[in-house]
Length: 125
Image (cartoon, rainbow, N blue to C red; front, side, top):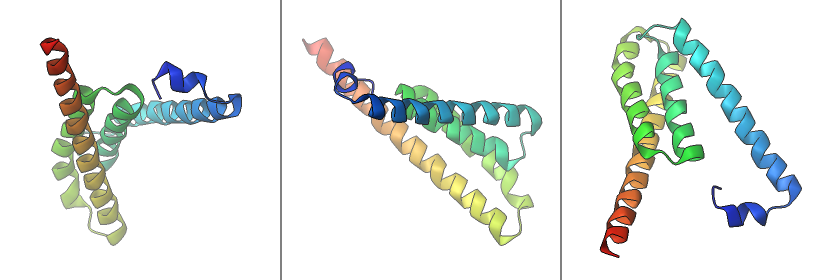
């Protein structure tokens, strides 16, 4: 909810709930950044952290380009992770990560197209 008008129409309880969820998402992102420093390129946690970062860029900032870059990085890292995971639960985590990559890439592509069409319409004016 980046729109100032929508924010002004919210009750204090709704604003508190919204900001609490944002604060929790940012805290989770900080933990992910620490994990990125600890794990190497071939670890699933690093790919998952890039996906969460892509989703956060898209959801909280609306930055489609950054979201696309991080989801692409996660997509590059995932094949390095996949062969070592043989148990069913680990495969489930890999598939979930892959699904989240596709969702982030689709959202970034859609947001990018909307932004591009908005730029074109402004240029016509």
